[in-house]
Image (tube, rainbow, N blue to C red; front, side, top):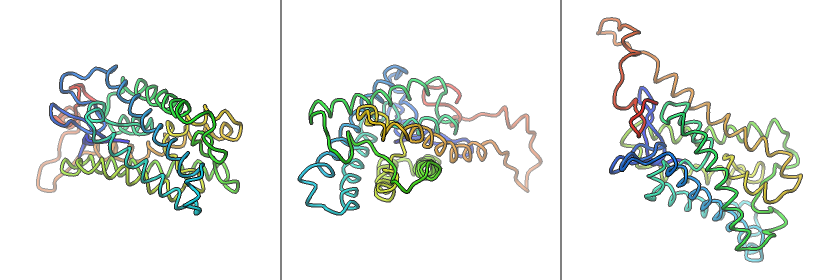
Length: 297
């Protein structure tokens, strides 16, 4: 998930929520006050854990407990969960903490931003580690609050594919869903005037994925969303497909990011100007080529 950064227009510029004294580039940590890598990763850990706690809580009370009987249709239940999770994401992305770290909350988002050239490579592994451990912590906190059994249908909110869905179809669906969500983020980040819509657009896109794919794949589109619940559930039915839920979103996220990267590095030529020197183009850099911390992405 992301909040406010820019993807290079000719080079993607950030993605998610950032801040630069006031509001940095999305996807990149806010440079104001010199946010350290450790502090930003800690924020990612806390926000991801908080969203997972809300997710597990929503699944317990909407899909795996008596109150959920008021919504007997699985699609209505999924819609209710999607609204709750979307609200939690919107809060996380627009909060001061989300602006401080960039509000990725998803290893696939971090990877996409790095591939697009909007996030420093040295922070990718710390962010991904923080997001996955935050998933474990948030799910574990839900276990402490609600008890060891969240429900028989979706233990700890872990998801599994429909019996009729092959491994290849599951991989394709999860990759495509993640690609769609990240395409929305990267597109919004490509125009400074659009970045303010990211905290609303990304939760909405995520909610749509949950409703559409919920009965087929579970609508994960985020390695951190499935990692913690699957580990805590500790059941073969969830472990057998875990690798797909971890790898497919990363593959899907890389696709729109590679498109952005290719387009941003393609030299522009004006029919009314002399042919530009490619070496000079490669050597020319602007402010938007820098990550929020001032280093070259």
